[in-house]
Figure 1: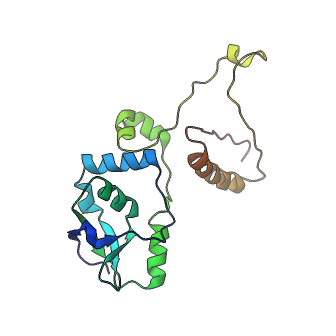
Figure 2: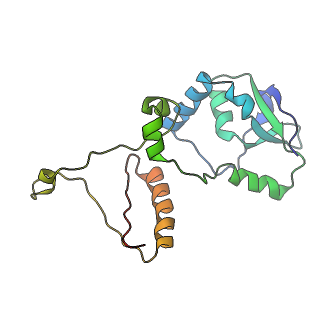
Figure 3: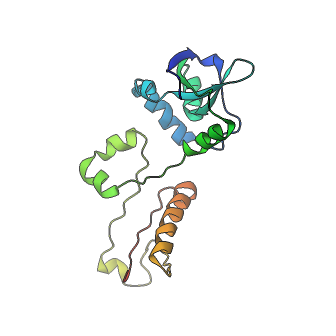
Length: 185
């Protein structure tokens, strides 16, 4: 069971050196801005920590937030202790806390949310390209975006590939996007 949240001096909390997640410059700036603009969110999403042998706290969940809080000069951070968890539970939490199981419904976001707000809040929106007109598709001299077609043998293979491709695009090719069309499924 997690213990009640407390605020502690930031100097009492250590990064988890075994955390396999990193945050890059642009996203780190967005995280800091998010904390500065909406600090109350920290009370609902505190750092999850364990007490080390030396009495200091080590982060299980919230390494990036701790880094951002340090960078913006915070004196205290909210923590919840998970001292009663086993080593296996701690390892599971470290990974599961960072896994993104869901995906965005881009149509819902486009129709119901303000794009400027979404970007300001840290969501990386895909760059939307207009559908090319027939005149854009005719002729070798036209500048057309590069495309790729991949054929899959089953709907299950297609579904897994969608997840894999989106992860790759997010990681290696920012602002690239893909679309899927299925034949007779």
